[in-house]
Length: 528
Image 1 (tube, rainbow, N blue to C red):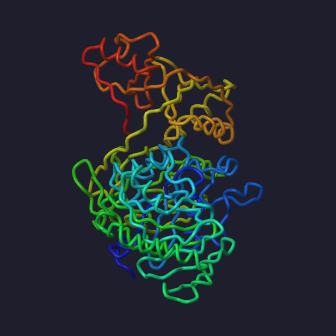
Image 2: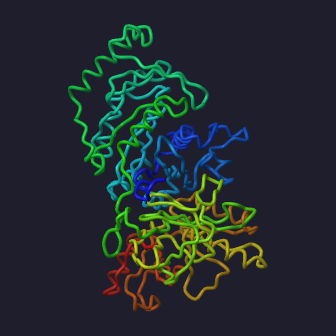
Image 3: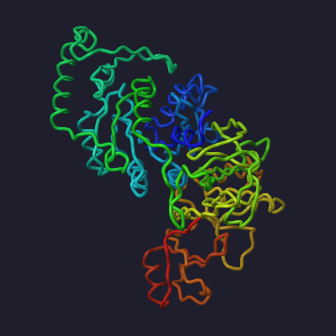
């Protein structure tokens, strides 16, 4: 039986980030295949069939073939216990990705070999850099015509500002893709696709193997040998410390769809990354090996199971060991409690857990007491993790229910979806809850709100887009917003916690407010 420190040491918790359609969900599934967590990968593209990505559980995701909410997936591989946080690729859901990255110790960045570094990749990469998260890069879709690998490395370095070290090197691309060269073992791994099954045919060849001319072809082999020589002569040396400090990204080439290079990537990824890292609290740092249990809520999801109408709070365990029925302290609620129905979740599938360790993600039944950013710890060791900043919404709409008899469902639905962090809800001063102002980071979130209110809460809504583009929180606690001298196109509102805010249509209106109200302090973000 392993000690709790041994259990923590074998944990790896990482997020997978990418631009939409780079193959992130497909790579996630192939990793699950190798861990034995699933037996057959369901293609996201196969919308005509009944199979969908195991990590895409929400009905709207299956219809559109995109991920709009983060999934948590756990599996075992070669003695490791791996927690994957699969994030939405679509930029309209970047706030969910940001919160999820707060729970990760490292990140896998998936890049499309034919498209290179794309817009959303840049945005997510910057979030990783803010937290000094180690980033491992997987250049995907090498079985399709791809950019020159030297050009791809240069693009990563120039656009993202991080040094690269290719751990393996692709031999050809598209129809000419023959496999990868492992620079550590100096062996060529030639692969044969096998319809998404785990057992992929692979053959190893040494560089001086005479059979290579037949396997690669004389010309492709000559080009490949020239590239390896150039790489060894001009490339930077590998530096593990630089990787773990987020200054150097190891780069792997492969094809998730056909399984080229996925298992070697997984094996080396586990060596490159660390067990759970220390975490910052308001008063210091928490060591993951500490015997005192601590965790924070980074995600809340209602109605994962429509039959049960439940609400699950996802917690990242930061230190110690969690046991079912143990008494914990909820810091923000200032109360002792027992976490109900602790579960580890494979997308929509659930399994009640008796124990979990630092690095693990558990879901607990939430009767409505948790908020994103809340700290839970052992009763005798009170700590408080730093809050998770919220993105400022960029799009606003006035929303009300069509049927006035469904006001109760409307309030419940909008509040629950807001508590998940998918939307932000505001009210005009002195207004009731018959209608609310909804703020979102991306307009697609309005579609998700409408869909979920209709399908999960049986409420049809009327949505009126508003012209505001900027929102600011009022820092001055004692200030009555009704006394402010504001431009005519500025609206006074408050959030669910009673904080006062201002909505503006232009930067000019913000300057007006600051110029005409001496001492007024505004900030661009709130805190969960």
